[in-house]
Structures are given as structure tokens and as C-alpha cells.
Length: 206
Image 1 (tube, rainbow, N blue to C red):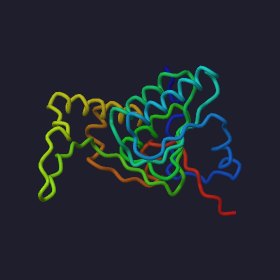
Image 2: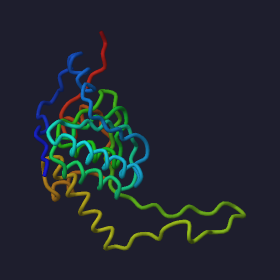
Image 3: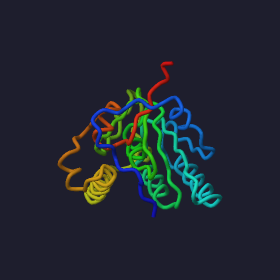
Image 4: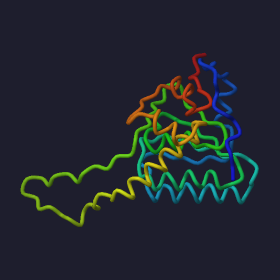
């Protein structure tokens, strides 16, 4: 199983990367894009790309470029497990937004985890919304929405959530349960201190 080789930085203030470092973030030929809503179809594509690239070369790293506000927990779980199930490292890069499930995927990278300095990062606890009320004159369609999950399923999801947060932030599930609030908005500096990312890619001001 692949493990992240680069522990989270303990430095309080990140140093700007050089222009060469910025260019190297896109120098790799093995790139996978995770943009938009994360769903079953997107997860299937990403996982297939991971497996194909790992078969072609089990050593050279893969870059996963992320710009997403999140999506399905089940789809994110498949992507995370695929990253940790292949022999090559997967570097994760936030290109702008990494929120909800996308942020968990970002922090789950097995290589170097980075974000551009103006990225918007958000971790929040799993929530299940009630079906919307039908519009005036519209009949309620009981088959249109899934029933709310039962308590056992919710508890299993909470355990998975805490296990992921604890592991990828170099702690444990007990720490995650006590320390991670319902929602946590982060700047890249915040994410670096918490251990969500290992480095910040600064915009070229030259």
C-alpha cells in the first residue's frame, strides 16, 4: 500500500516557491484532472486512469489536479482507496477550490500535497439534507429522492470520516472527533499549519 512520503510541514509560515518550482508542478506527464462535481462517473474515470498509469509505470508519480467543491462520499472514498492502493505516489494539487469531499481527497495524497496560494479550502462534517418541498401545484414524487440513511449507516460514515481526517492529518480518529468542527474554512496558511497540505504554490509576481 502506498504511504505519503512527505509528512506535513511544521513550519508556521510557508516560504514562496521559486518560478522553477511553480513550473515543476506541471512538469509531469502523468496528470489526472478532478474538476467539478465528484460523482460515480467521475470516480470511475479517475480510478481507471490511476490503474492504467500504475500498470504502465509503477514508479513514476502521478499528479492529481483538483478544482472541485465536493460531491458524493462514496465516489471520494473510491478515489482515495485507489490512490492508496497503487504503488506509485499521487501528488495532489489544489488549482482553486478543494471543498468537502475534494478537500479530503487533497489531503489524502500519497506524494506531495500542495495548493495555489489563492485556493479556497473547506472541511465539513457529513450532512444529509431532507428532500425539498414540492413546488406549488407539483405533486410529491416519492421515487425521486432516496430515503434518509438509517442510524447505523450514519454511524459508519462518521467513523470513516474521523478515520480519514485523523490519518491524513497525522493524528487519529479520536483526535479528529474532538478537534475538527462541523465546518472549517481554511486559507492555504491555515491548511499548511493543520497538515492538510505540505506546501503552497505562490503566484508568479515577476
